[in-house]
Image (cartoon, rainbow, N blue to C red):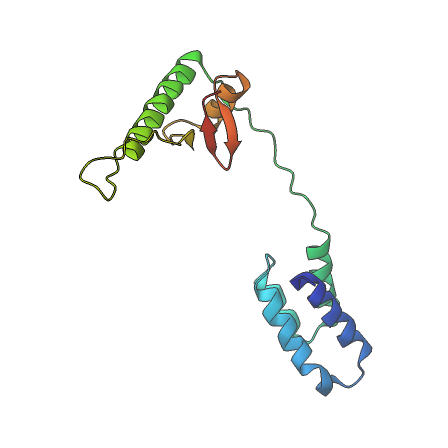
Length: 153
């Protein structure tokens, strides 16, 4: 049972009980659980303070059925070929440096181990917009490996 399901069950318990003294703990628990959720905290505090079951039910319903926010489409600036080339050059340089740094680690001996680096993907340099990296991926020049990491194809 996740936290939202727990809050829904608390609302059902509160609705079922007639004696308000028996449900003080449920109101407090509902307030604590909702304080950790992405909702209007002032409305939660007000509903719990006033023991307003309808307001609490509305808050939980809004969490269960979120309405997607529609943002107007922004026209993304064009990614030029020069931007893509500069980004790819920076990416290759960073990848090379990451591999060299990995290979030059000192082990337990006096010299390096001579092992080849296993690094094949790095986080894209932040000097370039994310649109540039997506354009390079779309062009087949890079491969997205997940969580912001890119590799050469």
